Length: 342
Image (tube, rainbow, N blue to C red; front, top):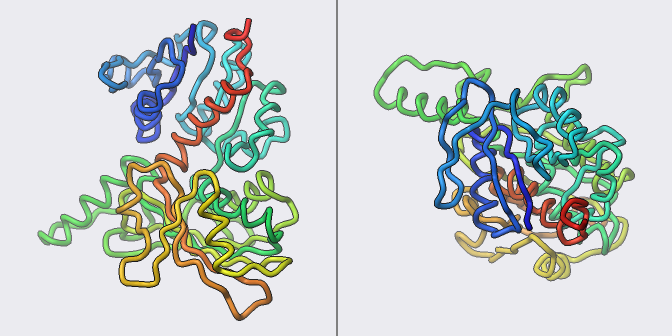
């Protein structure tokens, strides 16, 4: 007995991370298949000490599998996730395609685990935006204690959130500047090396970007629709690890010390908050870790019942692959895989 899992988009950054985390966390896995587009047919990826050859998405038989971890982009998911679910294979989708569909639960296991039961409507569970995932993990225990009224967030998002080509562009631009080569811009609208770009995803009519809208809408769906949220999303020249400067206004008083203690006990959170040089976490230090790190917890005297936080996480892990695997673990713990329970 055990799960049979197909990872779609297995050659991408997140797909490879999904395979690594599946092997690390020793889930009840009977078989894992690597699936990708026809262009990647036969490409090799690692699963623990095994090498898997990628199979073609168009010809793969999902009826023989319990679960699909989908990390192949929104367009692919919109086309294939309903077909895969119709074959009896539950889909956990990492794209934005299904997040705001009312029939599809949007789940962060530390925050809204009960929502996972709603997967039966479509056979699909959505993974949130990478920045949303780490944000709500930090907000949830504080919201439970003092009720959040308003949140102001500025993100500092690594280039890995835009894919491997974006990581390559940061590398090649950095090298080009040192050796005086021509600087090529293909993945970003402006130079990313030694720069920051206040623009992620497409612009909307009101001047926000889709990335900013996603964080607002997803936080409301996962945590509380009454929370007011404003976001500025910024791409920074970091390879892996998203950071967030978070300012929170609460309905009830909450001291920095009490918030620190609450977060120390919260699932998925690690507090590193010393008032000294280096007494905080940066993206470089979070890479490869499962936790959402919180630092720089302090009271904001400019508003009543205000706190400020610094939140950092490995976006390829908690922001994507880890959250998907945690959803699998949650479903296993609740006996939601019917074929295994039969």
